[in-house]
Amino acid sequence: MGPWIHEAKTKMVSLIDTVHAKNPNARVRVGFVGYRDYDDAEQYIVIPFMNAQDTMQGIKGVTAVGGDDIAEDVANGLHRALHMDWSDSEVKIVFHIADAPAHGMDFHGAVVSDRFPRGDPDGLDPRDIVERMSFLDIHYTFVKIHESTDTMIEQFHNCYGNGGTFTVIDLLAQGAVMSTRPPTLGTGDPTTMSDELSRAVTRSIASYTASQETRYY
View 1 (cartoon, rainbow, N blue to C red):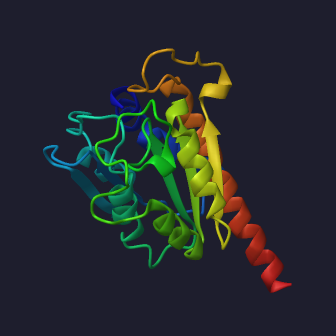
View 2 (view 1 turned 30 degrees about the vertical axis):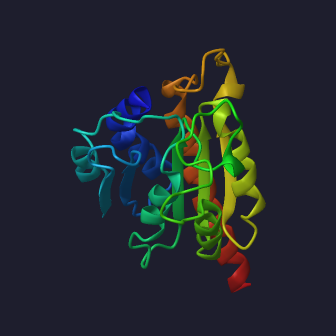
């Protein structure tokens, strides 16, 4: 995940500037949830919603470390994202950037090493959390950077039908070479991510604006 965290650190402010240029009336706040795995030091890093410059300062020291297996604590990461303060947000967007699936054989194939094949040891099912996000009309965009997350993506898509949107930005399909190594690292191109995220934000804002205009009529 190192290159992807670096891309977020270096491009976040310019990404928000691009969104503002296309949507000058939008007030954009950015939060961050970083998750590692069980037994890793500083398992969660949560930064509440604030302006992009302050959020960028908050993630400057974040690095990708730890992990005794490939599967990660996706469930608790999503749980913390769900419980951030969304109360005054008209357009709610989650970008989930991950190079490894959740714990549990429901979310990956046998090639993925997993200390908790029966699922999250805290008893959280990430599908339940993703479904609750759909009830909150959150636009959930998963940034795919490794094929090991394919089964998890399918599971999440199947339970996201009550509101909001579920979208996959497949950076592997945009010309990156598929990895023949065990799925420990993403193989997409981090530099292509910013433009895709900017377009996704603009689409979500446009969708919300169109729904308001229809409501007024």
